[in-house]
Structures are given as C-alpha cells and as structure tokens.
Image (cartoon, rainbow, N blue to C red):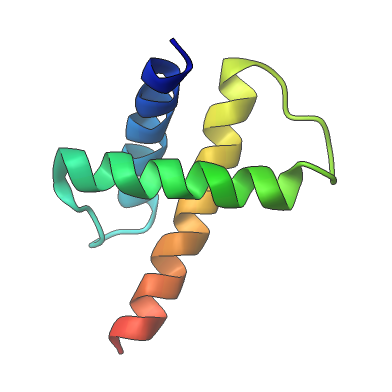
Length: 78
C-alpha cells in the first residue's frame, strides 16, 4: 500500500512542480518519476528541519523537492 501512496503523492507533486516551474512537464510517467525523486529530495531536506506530517505535508515536501530537481535539470540543459 505504501508504494501506491508514493506513486499518488509523486504524481501530484510532479504535476504541481510542472505547473509552478513552467515548461518542464514530462507527461504522466515523467511527472510521477520527478515527484518521487522530489519526495526523496524533500524528505532529505525537510526531514531534520521541521516535522512534515500527513498527506498534505508529504505533498508539499515532495513538490518543493521536485521544484528543486526541475531547477537543477534546467541548469544542466543550458
């Protein structure tokens, strides 16, 4: 069941990051992948800073991590 939640949170976070960081949407599967990697980055960054609880907190943390990932991708593409 955790894998299903991770995919759902990753999809939502990837979609939101694609909307916030304009021009870097990767389609459904790409957004899920960006969201999952973003969740890992967000968990690493915010795990020790403040307690991110619940589904809403996970989505916010994953979205911020996905935005950071998209920013790094945009720097590499230049």
